[in-house]
Amino acid sequence: MSDKKSKKEDKQFKKAERKLYDYTGLKSDVECLEYELEMLEKEYEGCKAITYSSETTGITNNITDTVYEELIRREKDILDKTKKINKKKIQIKRVEAAMSLLDETEKKIVEARYFSNDRRKNNWNHISKMTGYCDRQCVNIRDGLIEKIKNRL
Image (tube, rainbow, N blue to C red; front, side):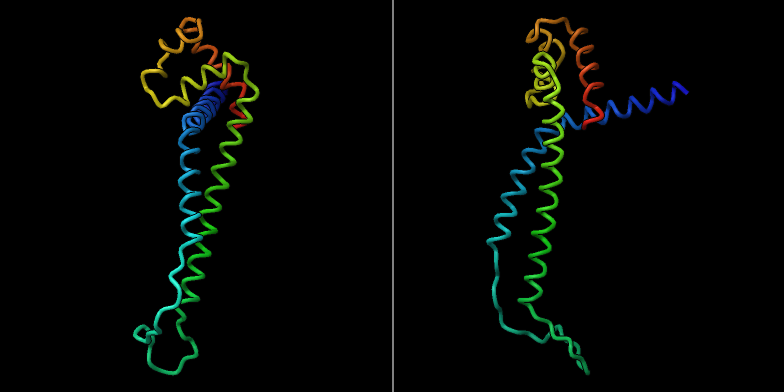
């Protein structure tokens, strides 16, 4: 029973750690998606000549309207992008809310380990020099802080 619990907790630990690693990427994704959304909202092809090449011959009341189809497609794309942006913003806010629970040393460790783009600076040796703790103590602090915030992520 305790083995199952530790495996479940280990999955939660890894999931929380993954969300911390993804934080800076999420912020970048939101910027890109917002730019794409802005471009999509400004993009409009407008009216074109009516073609009947895609129309079937026979009795029908269904006539293809290219402007209508474009507006529907565009609105769907805008809605999809907006949903993606909102979902990523919620994930960002959850990480930021969890970070508010941490003390200064824990925040330094998280920022150095998970938010740094420089792979040389996120190793335990560098983090231990930065915080003044030994590398094993930094790992223990990391374990404790993830236990503290994993349910909030």
